[in-house]
Image (cartoon, one colour):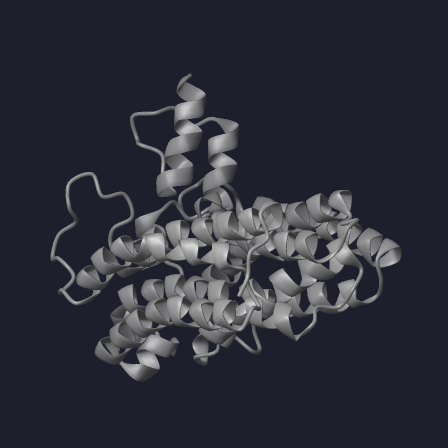
Length: 333
């Protein structure tokens, strides 16, 4: 079906070809930048699988609600960032955000008022989910959700503007690692994560951080001109490229340490099947960014972020598969 093909294209590229008719679902997938939701679902599922492996009676319904809440929160976060960056004069028609994919307002998909209403609706739904889970599981739900909301909103919102102060990348590490994974674990088990769970939340957080780092490396010149001090602007493009490569490699080092200490089961070693992809990505990072986009390349002028996300999807998926197999066939050192 053509509509399904539209959805698949938007999920894969964050764009819809100009020769295709925009349907309602594709429109909202673009507005919420659903192409990157896989990272949020992966973080939530890591917490869920760690929980399922830990207790005999995991709360499946609470887990599903937590995953739904995380996806809606990510959608709200993306729309909120677009709103505040537009209000602050960062997002303009010639800025990177409006070039690699349609901006909700600048592209004409929504009015400013409609974007605000969409953000409000998403936050209301998430608030209902949060309050319900806090009532049935415990008050720490408010802590996990509140901290995540704080970092997400003030990522670009004044007065903190974490992204502008080199704190956006560490913030993403905290949200997609300890907060999402630890929070989902708590919701599914009703128990606070122990040291092993907190440690197990770190590897995937590293490669989510590499995706944001890649995006900010792609924008280092324009961000610097706008006074946006992301970590790559502070460090410089060259050191940031090397740092991001080190972060990708450290994913495998941390997982190795967790397996050797018995914190994670041996099946998680399946992540090493992603090493050939890592090698291809590292090669891209060691070469200059091309002057022109390759044929049919959908998200130009972004470049390094695509490579980071390409690695993230396989490495994260294999992490999930390893956790699942360790539930079915437990095996650890």
